[in-house]
Length: 106
Image 1 (cartoon, rainbow, N blue to C red):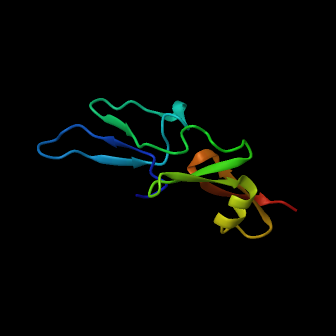
Image 2 (image 1 turned 45 degrees about the horizontal axis):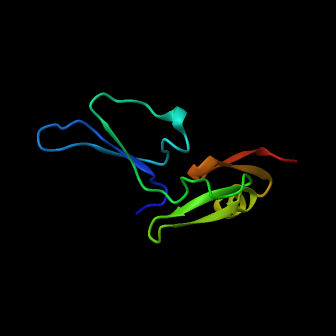
């Protein structure tokens, strides 16, 4: 399983099939981002990071294969995951592990 997928939505039945939308957010990490779709079924995935086991300055990265997690310091995560040039700052967005490059820091 992809560690970035923490929930999915099953669309309404159309004939013999349903759509399936994978998501990197869930009702625990981002409750205000949930959007109700008529006829769709929201399905969170059992996530070892749900209990917020890491410190505030850390990001919880789930490992669904081993039902475990790793706590990574936000700045270390930024430097390891980003492809931002060295003269740019980077920001890790909450539990989604998405990295953004920001403008020059000098």
